[in-house]
Amino acid sequence: MAFDASGGRRGRGRGRSRGRGTLSEINVTPMVDVMLVLLIIFMVSAPLLSVGVPVDLPKTDAAALNEQNEPLTLTIRKDGSLFVQDQPAQIADVAERVEALTGADRHRPIYVRADGAAVYGVVAQVMAKLSGQGFSSINLVTDTGDDAPAAMTPALRP
Image (cartoon, rainbow, N blue to C red; front, side):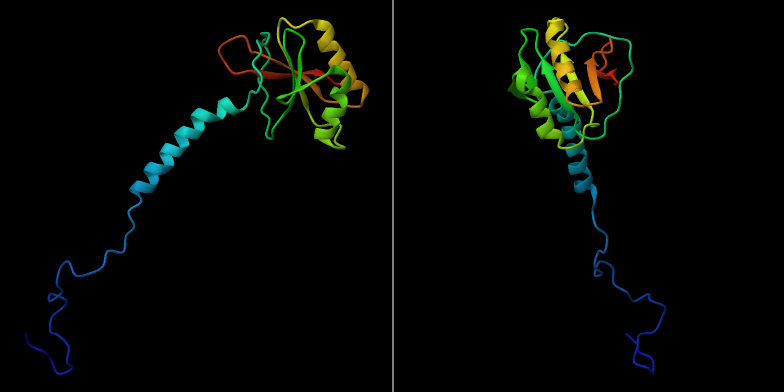
């Protein structure tokens, strides 16, 4: 090969060999595949994490509310058993248990999930106990009547 006076090769880069350069691109296809699998797993498992105690909710025509943070729920089964979040509780200590979870925030929404066949007196006692302790945002959770997920509708606004 001929060299010019400056010691370099002649020509306009025709002498570059192919295949010797380093590949500077990152292959992101495996990362995208993993992210899509994780997205599908989270989409399938997320609805299973929101309900703790199974109950048959009554049907209504109300629209669903969008709640950003984790709701504070009280569940009343048809046999009258009461749960604060997913822990069993008694009617006498329900206000203290809710107060321990909410702290000084008396305006945090509380959602009462009562079975459609639950005794009305038990539901009324629980709601009266909470209202008497100063909680101002007590809501009843109902089903929307179609195959959509459970809706949260406001019940009491003292």
